Image (cartoon, rainbow, N blue to C red; front, side):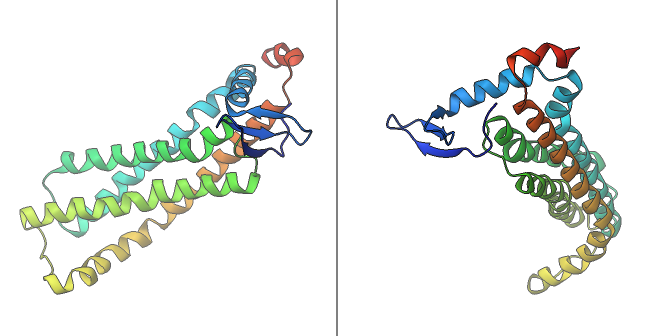
Length: 215
């Protein structure tokens, strides 16, 4: 079992090592290898949740992108370019959220670098809110503003009044997206908590009980 109180140090050969607190050090590569072996001994349902959980969160982010896009299209009376605006609004939040969650939660857990439960939950919540809520709103604004200007579907602001104009346009949409932001934050928190539970279960696995978990 890997100790939970690792300390990261730099070895003489430049390789990162972790202090077990017992005068022993384990290289990062060895820790990742041990965790991967323990991961393979988990029940299939745990492995699937750990591996595909970020995709579910990212899928919600893609849906949020479509919702934000729809709101801006209505406010700006944009009827053209439905496909060209919907495609990036679904794909970009999906890819961004999946990449963010994997980089900040999944990978650190699988490398033994994230042992703080509170940090894990906060990271999951932030990725859900930022990647699956705020980012789609910020992305939908310029996409639909460009379409509105191109097709003259709504009056455009003068140069000196652009910030106030787009702020007024965005405020009611942000209010409507509050529920989406809340749900994404809750889902990100839930997913990170489940992955943390799986990670802690993984740490308790020994070579002798691997078969029992699969039974």
